[in-house]
Amino acid sequence: MEFPKNLLPDEASAEWMNKADNAWQISAATPVGLQSVPGLMILYGGMVKKKWAVNSAFMALYAFAAVLVCWVGWGFRMAFGDTLVDFWGKPAVALDEKFLLEQAFLGYFPNSTMVLFQFMFAAITLILIGGAVLGRMNFLAWMLFYMVPDGWLAKLGVIDFAGGYVIHLSAGVAGFTAAYWVGPRSDKDRERFPPNNILLMLAGAGLLWMGWTGFNGGAPYAASSDSSLAALNTHVCAATSLITWLVLDIAIFGKPSVIGAVQGMITGLVCITPAAGVVQCWVAILMGIISGSIPWYTMMILHHKIKLLRYVDDTFAVFHTHAIARSLGGILTGFFAMPKLSRLFFLPTGFGLAYSLQTSRTSAGFHQLAIQLVGMAFIVCLNIVTTSLICLFIQLIVPLRLSDDELDIGDNAVHGKEAYALWNDGERFDNSKLNSIYDVDEFTSNFSKTASELQMVDRFGTCPLHAALLDLYY
Image (tube, rainbow, N blue to C red; front, side, top):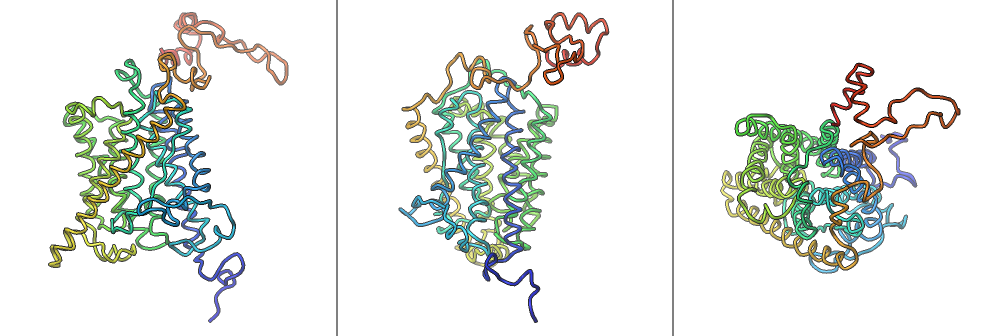
């Protein structure tokens, strides 16, 4: 029986390439990219104080672009190529068509697909780190800051389904370390830092959540049943974690918090990442309950009791949502990893402690759990050291923290732009009487008046829309 013409190998489709896997991998890379741009851009831009909206979103946009250049320049082959030392790769470019069209180290698709897919993970790692230093880090210092993950832990036997160690644990620890070296926000911002646009924040959170389908679903490098299970477990855990966080908010503080719901969603997504395709769906619910409760306790209760946590100004609590949640995920993976599912993910030694007790292979289960903890400790130490060295090096070139004057003003001082082009604090909004294209009168405008004058006019019923806007912004 002959293959259909579209499945026959040719110069553009080598015999080793699986077109379905290649198509899925590129498709999975896209929502992972959308998690960063525009997902985290919108989430950060809406979740910070109004004067930092542009700066926060721009940090995410810049990081996405900068990491791509670094990734093809040296990062990809440093992470997945030849080894320089046991835990550090040899830098090399990934730009030559001969290399990019060869079969990737895993899967049945070319290196170019793998470079693209893994880049999305490298980019979001740096952007997540940025969540810990928003509202005060010098943008020039941010431009010099980068981080590259490594693949050494997989050889050790760590079960990490979709990069939870090198992405989320790294981001949580590196972000907390960077926040220590950069220093705190201004006293005024630390005391009061309300989100400027909760609806935009929720839109960004939604993109982040939906993008996790590609994040975990693409980890098997194949359009397989394990990929489907990983995607389902991801959403089940996130939903359970969100609900758990809300229940705790209501029980302790009396009100459901929108920001709390977002934090609970994130901790669920982070916690399930190392286990997504190697645990059963009921385990995803259990992990959601744990990821929605323990990080809640560390953030809402323990944070205020530990001096170091109070001292370091972690803007978006990345330490709790990523480092703590990811540590829980790593430990729970070592406990609940199912041997059959681990084999589907090319891990013949993946034996969770719970299943090893059932099959009288207790030593294998304890060994797996120990490996998970060793991998966790290594990532924590590596990120503390490397992030500290990077920050100290950058500090020799430019200050890590903005000046006090810039901290008081925000976006306008740093970028010469503001997020919302509306009148404010009695300032005039310049609006030309003539249309710049047709050179004719547009309309009679009240925008040239001061805010106090507009309030007087609107209170007497001239324009209900102006009254609503003024109520919103003043």
